[in-house]
Length: 105
Image 1 (tube, rainbow, N blue to C red):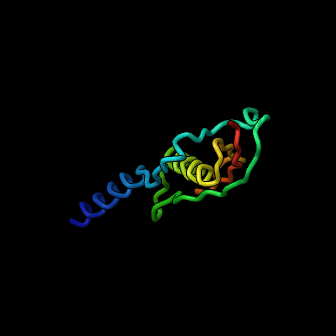
Image 2: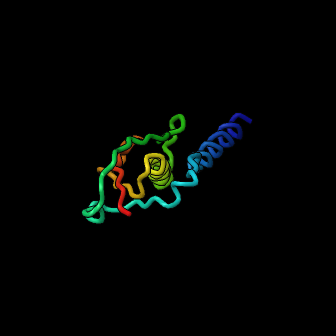
Image 3: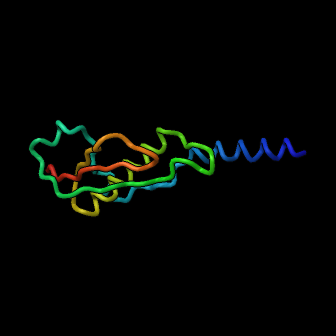
């Protein structure tokens, strides 16, 4: 009985670790995530430091899910600031990442 509880809890945590909790805002759907070379003619209007859970308890979340959430948060912030493009500054670390926000159009 104890083993079944441990298995149930472990499998539940693994399933939850792949879930995405961050939803895009309406305006953020038109914000692009691009590489630095694509913003040479754009105006930088700000920056954002995004953060999401990289672990649930002792279980590390799926890296692709965390990266997607960080980008969604950056796109949400860019839309709120009137930006249409974001560029990641470095890679994510422990569920955080910095993005520069641009207006290109």
